[in-house]
Each structure stands twice: as structure tokens, then as C-alpha cells.
Length: 76
Image 1 (cartoon, rainbow, N blue to C red):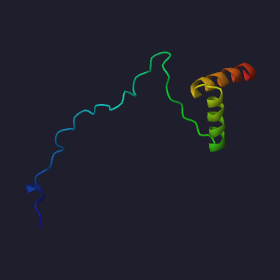
Image 2 (cartoon, helix red, strand yellow; image 1 turned 90 degrees about the vertical axis):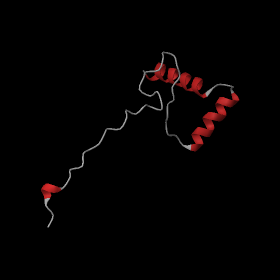
Image 3 (cartoon, rainbow, N blue to C red; image 1 turned 90 degrees about the horizontal axis):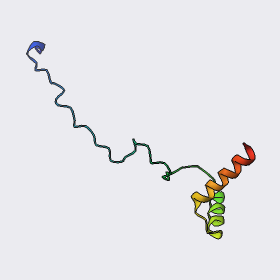
Image 4 (cartoon, one colour; image 1 turned 135 degrees about the vertical axis):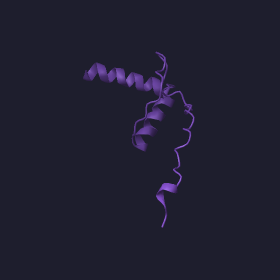
């Protein structure tokens, strides 16, 4: 039988070093800086929107901003 009193208790050891974030995702972006927005849409709609933007030589972000302004003006 094992004598429990003679067993050596293992400690937790030293804690790991503080993790250094690989990305700067904890700070707020500067005003006016563009940040990504992810939405799920059908592949057909994606193709249609991208084609429209290309035909009119408009960036997708500018097209979205224009659509959003139009929506707010007409829907409140």
C-alpha cells in the first residue's frame, strides 16, 4: 500500500508569459478609417452587385455607402 504522506506534491509551476496579441484588434479604429463588414448573401446577388460596381466603375464600399444612404432616406 502507498503511504500518501511520503508522496511529493507537484506544484503548478511558473505561469506562462503574458500573450502578446498578434493583431491590434482591441483598439478602436481611427475616425474615417474603413473597416471590414461581413454579410452572407447568395452567390447570384454577389455576382450581380460586383458586376454593377464594375460596369459603373464604383468601388464596392462606395456602392454600399450609397445604397445605405438611399435606404435611410427612403425608409427612415
